[in-house]
Length: 105
Image 1 (cartoon, rainbow, N blue to C red):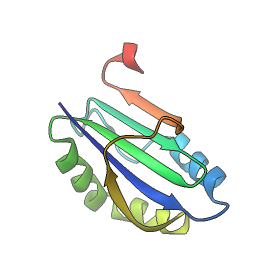
Image 2 (cartoon, rainbow, N blue to C red; image 1 turned 90 degrees about the horizontal axis):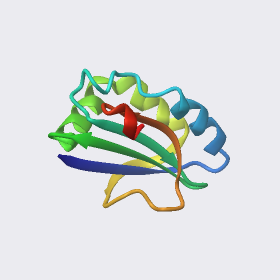
Image 3 (cartoon, rainbow, N blue to C red; image 1 turned 60 degrees about the vertical axis):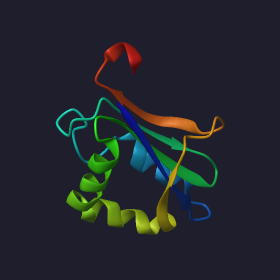
């Protein structure tokens, strides 16, 4: 199983709006897309998305292309391009969590 995490820097004052956008979940069904887990985290300055499953990186890149309109809405909330990170920092707050294994959610 692969873990793939990306981050993007939030524009100043956009953390609350980002939380509202993330708390409703993604515009796709993680199970249908072959993920075993998908999570979204926030800090005061960054958003983090975590994808888990076989081929998580490829799946995340495919989803970014497939849902281009939804992804482009984040230009109002984030600045710059997202970048890969090794993991979500421990001070990040989880605002959305989905797991194929309900005991993990």
